Image 1 (cartoon, rainbow over the protein chains, first blue to last red):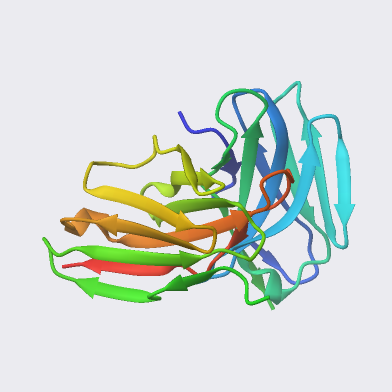
Image 2: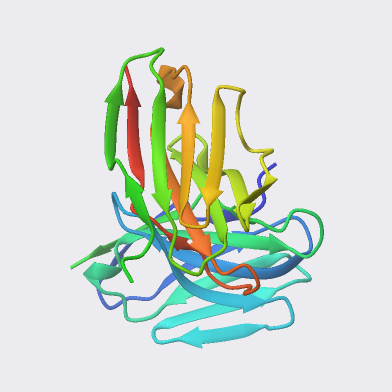
Length: 112
Length: 114
């Protein structure tokens, strides 16, 4: 099965609310990254968290990593309409294949 | 820097035709990745290169697909012959080899095979 599964598949919230997206994975990892994709565009890197880190912040983004549960969450605080996009987690394994494996993504809709 | 450049941005072709997608990575980035994105299968890694050498092509779906990187500033993904199920958005991404950080994605090529 696929490494990196996001949950929920789709999320619709009002502007100003917080959005939380979750990612689960199956193998031991070196790091986990979150990317954003606007409709019709390429992916843009948001944040990277290493396997020895538990939490990381960048602006309105907060990422947590629980390696014991093999899961991560991305929190976007005080969401804006411009945050509407698909969000993907990507994992880099610590052994074997070193390329990133992307999840299926969460489609976030922020209503103005 | 202009970022990762892909061409063409859109390609419509008929089944059986050869399709060549092109990518220019960011200067100084010596890892290059080709991905395919569809609604059904999501984002799939097809192949990646380090220093122009293919490292992992296990994601290439069939022998109809081939990729080359003749130099550090250019890569191609070729499909011959193309089939309707190859319709997808193909992304190229690059990163510095020794830095374990983000990949920089191009805008993608939307391929439609009729």
